[in-house]
Image (cartoon, rainbow, N blue to C red; front, side, top):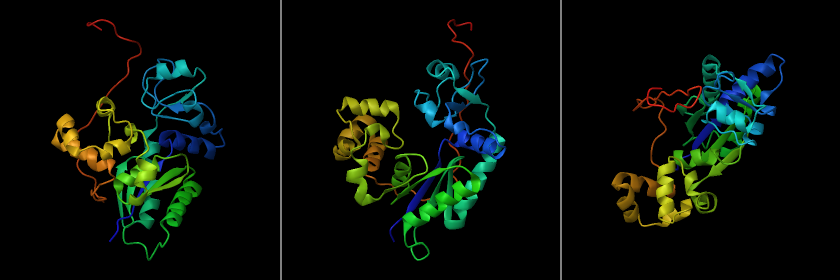
Amino acid sequence: MARLVFHIDVNSAFLSWEAMRRVKNGEADIRLIPSAIGGDRESRRGVILAKSIPAKKYGVKTGEPIAAALRKCPQLYLAKPDFSLYSQCSHAFMDICRKYAPVVEVYSIDECFLDMSGTSRLYPDPIEIAKTIKNEIRDTLGFTVNVGVGSNKLLAKMASDFEKPDKIHTLFTEEIPTKMWPLPVEDLFSLGRSAAERLHGMHIRTIGELAAIDVADLRAVFGIKMGEHLHRYANGIDTSPVLAESEEAKGYGNSTTLAKDLTTAEE
């Protein structure tokens, strides 16, 4: 049986959820102005957790310090995080997904995988049912999602990252040469900056070039496990199942941003 997987990703989740709450209260939609979620404007501490499309045009990036974002966009509107709201919205959109999919894997607070394999009798056209799910989330909850439709989790995830917001994209196995291989190697899911720089050193610039290289060369540079992983992913190969219960976390991280640059060991 051919696999069919959807990846559903909320567009600028934290900012969309805050905007949705404000719009329901009759306030202005902060998605339409340069805005972001995160940190404290007065102390200039913290990082950008999510940003609007107008803020992105100023070069504001998710994960960068508040101070750096304000230098790029002094008029940036900042809203404080509200994780209680985010949890409510997350549960609400995933409950809609569970109406349509036999198995839903919670991948993060704002994205999930749907295993739609074997549902062709119920939903003959995967694009139409993806549109139904996307539009129900938008019309019922007031925020938009992207839906990636693919032959496995990797391809569905890659597809959902194509043009945003409020879009559906496919990436089936037969579409890999035209839709995936021309992309910069940095766009390959799970590929970090350091690995991308090492690939550049091997004169590998696109995912297609990574897919074509001898796997032995990748093993020599990255080790057996990582080298084979990169080669499989570049060729669109992913056999991992959609899990109804998430795997136990392998680690947890915590960080903070200080109000000013520290210049001495004592500080």
